[in-house]
Image (cartoon, rainbow, N blue to C red):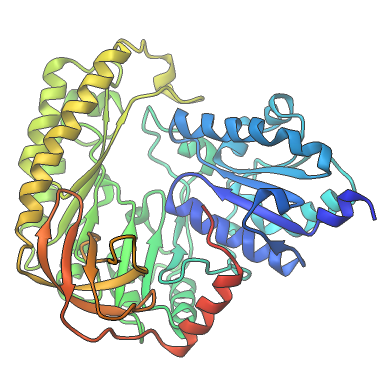
Length: 465
């Protein structure tokens, strides 16, 4: 039997980037399994190697091409390579020139066409594309989704972005904003609950920009409705855009206990001048007003954010504005990045006036100050009892790892090893800047038999990287 035939129906997939990419990979995995492929955990055993890519930052993009170059030696073994996602949509046919051993290039909106593209691949075609389909709402079809996360079900409620921030490539790789009906979201939430999952995360590049095509529910009303689905204990959502962050979202979190008390609200800069150059279309004061709504809630809502340093034209004063914003808000965590020019964006034509060593220094200052803030913030949890959902079994220190409703990592000791997806009360005995440590003080609430069955299936369908 030829080598190609031996390998063709096995696949390995590696995912780069955000939770939306992770959920997209679940769709790809589900489709491949439906088409008779078997997933393997080692690329050496795969006939088809897929990379689901991210182009938000230059580093992620470079990593993809480095990985492709690393594995091109396997081409002689009859393996096929596919590049999916944002880099695929951004680079298109140029990928074939840069990595001629790649046979399939497809953007996220074309995954529903994977069966047809796979058939062409199996027939021997070597340059197959699924691109320029970014306006379709058929991307929401998740009929064949493989729920590879053992404790959380993801639902994409909105695709694309209309914001056109000057540094961001997403509108060019994901297309315009298009939302799915609230009825279809709730139907998927109910299916996930029936599978035994108790936590749902709603996804979108700008999740709170959701506009129900059926005009039945606002984003806040949809949040509340998902939180009321029978069997669901936790609902998360990411990522929000400040322009569309409305007070009724905070009111919903206050009113519906199953909505997690955590909001990720990327600010990107604390300087109104830099925000204007970034085309964020809000000011520092506008952003802080939304923070004030959140801090005035009855519940203690954890706040996290994204921040870019070294954007073209950022002065020392602008950077200082970011540091003072950090201190004013008191985030529980941030994701800090150095600015890097991205293809097709307006900012690529700006003079990148900030030297690399200055960007590095500013990022170090940002992270150091945030670490101090987190050390103080996390200290308030000492001696508190928090409910933790288990995510991983015992580590090398014998600690179980889980997450609180505020999305904080909790490592704790327990007499038994509760399965992923179970809930347990933990008394916090130590605090660190990025995690909490404690001791279990209750018997874990064990996941339903349906989820146990799903986890058994997931054991045969390895989680994507």
